[in-house]
Length: 225
Image 1 (cartoon, rainbow, N blue to C red):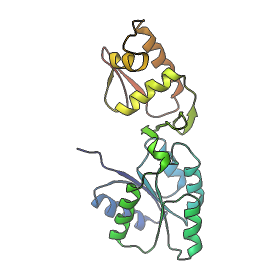
Image 2: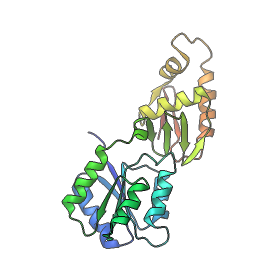
Image 3: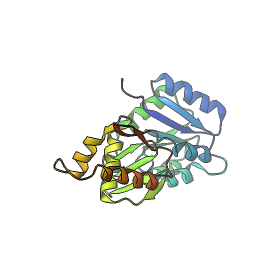
Image 4: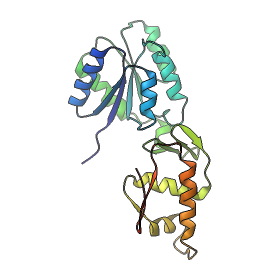
């Protein structure tokens, strides 16, 4: 069975968060709600959602600041964002869209409209996302050949990069040692299998800032979890 899409929603009004939970889970998605940006960014370190709803008028960090931070980070730039606000002025909508938001919805909104906009946002696949692989808080930007772990960019050797890409693509399933050696070193590789262990050890250190880590399945291979 396919994994449910995950929606994050930020609003400082509890009744709106309750509405989100009811409407979004009722439409078949997973949903997590947060009262502000601090809580949102804490959650992003553990798991990246498929789409984010952000209220513009928030105490502390407002919706525009959250949007700017999201679009400025390689790990979250490709996530579709819908801005939400009671403001009816055209300038609020234009400002959010110009800053990189994918859509805008004004309060009060109906549940059917909310779900329709979420579905529309999920159908849009930004160019940046087409070249992005991710699992947990590890993100690989294939176009830039860049990796972020826990929101921080990390430097990898070519072999480490290929190993991580293999693990992310297969996650959460185990990649067998033989498959790793064949795909990263080539089918004609007859060197020491210890080479793989050394590269995995170095890769673990490189992505130590991520919550997601490399797990050893003894005698079999490795996976991310």
